[in-house]
Structures are given as structure tokens and as C-alpha cells.
Length: 159
Figure 1: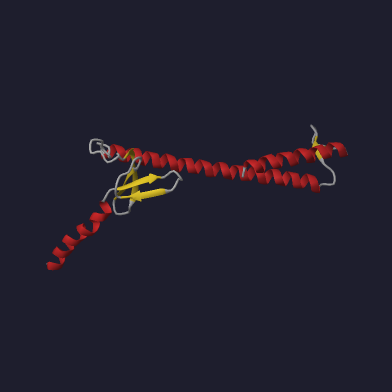
Figure 2: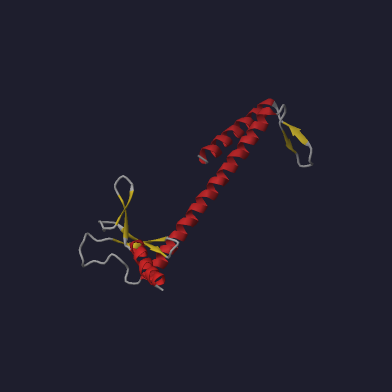
């Protein structure tokens, strides 16, 4: 029975530092700093639950004046806002990754087209009736040049 009582007293004491307010700020050089004291422009960070999910408050810390609050009066609303902001940021990162993958694919396709046009002895286009129409040397050089320019443009955009 004493063990249970001791555990019941110690567990909340061990968790109390984890529930303290933490403030996140970014200095002029772009370095992120965390502190237990508010500073001008700092955002209140809360860890919810035991899995340490971080929620950044949308309100900023005051200059130490007790008259201006550092938290939203409705914590559920600010938590919903923070969750929405995190969801939006995750979606933006996904879009950026998708765009980067698409551009890399376009670059690879342009490189392949250029390589094929350089390695081919003769270049042709398919006519309306499905027959091959072979290009003259000047026309083939123009196709190679266009493929080169398209490859450079596609690969430059993917960087």
C-alpha cells in the first residue's frame, strides 16, 4: 500500500516539469531558440499528452507586461488553429516534394530524349499514315539543338 501511495505522489511530480510553458523565438540570424521566459515576439509552445505532440500558440509573448496575455483565452481554439497550421505546413511540404519529383522526372525524360537524338544515326518523325519520314541532316541538328535546350531548361528548373 505504501508503494502505491509513493508512486501516486511521485508520478505527478515527475510530470510537472513537462507541463511548464516553453517559448519559441527566432533571432535575427534565423536561429530558433527555446526558453522558459517570454521574450518579445516569442510564441508559446505546449506539449500535449504523453507523446509530446508540440502545439505552437499563434499569439506572441509580451514584453513582460502583465497586462497583455501570452495565451489565447480559448485554449481549444488555439490548439485547433495550431493543428490546422501544422496540417497546412505538412501539406505545403508534400506539394513541394511532389513538384520536385515531377521536375526531376521531366529532367530525366528530357535527358533521355536528348541522348537518344544524339546517339541516333538518323532521326525521323512519324507521318500521318504511320510511315517514317527521315529528316535531313540540318533538320536533325535542329531537333538535337531543341532537345538540348529543353533538357537544360527542364534540369535547371529541377535544381
